[in-house]
Image 1: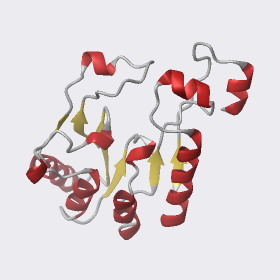
Image 2: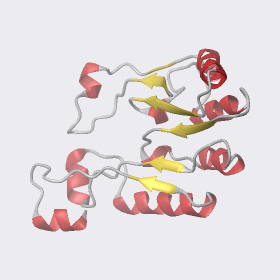
Image 3: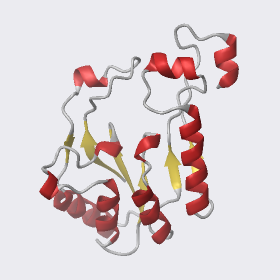
Image 4: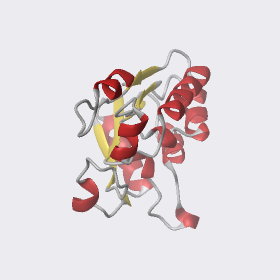
Length: 174
């Protein structure tokens, strides 16, 4: 079952229209999400996929004293009941935090060791034109960290080819 927990994005990636059409970032209340996940688990769903337009921004729209980040949400949902596991949809590489990885590592039977982390391009010049916030080197460093902390992790990614101005050399870098 898919559970939308977040919507909106304000990041300026040059290829994306979402910040123009959904610039307001919002996160569902944790209690509301927990109720939905409990109902789904009670109905027999064995896996719940947490989704959002920019999932890593979960909680950032809340006042600091009420803020629960994605790692905190996952921790709380683990406690809802037994018998189901949690999977995360796409996350930006700089949002794969040590805290999130620690939660995943502490609950390997409850949180799928799968992360979808979009790279978009292996070319530094294309990444700059895309206005991406992380370098290829940082991307691979974080992926190595995932491999260090999680048993048998699955990593998947997105890569765009044919970005305006992409050369053969840029393509080969990807």
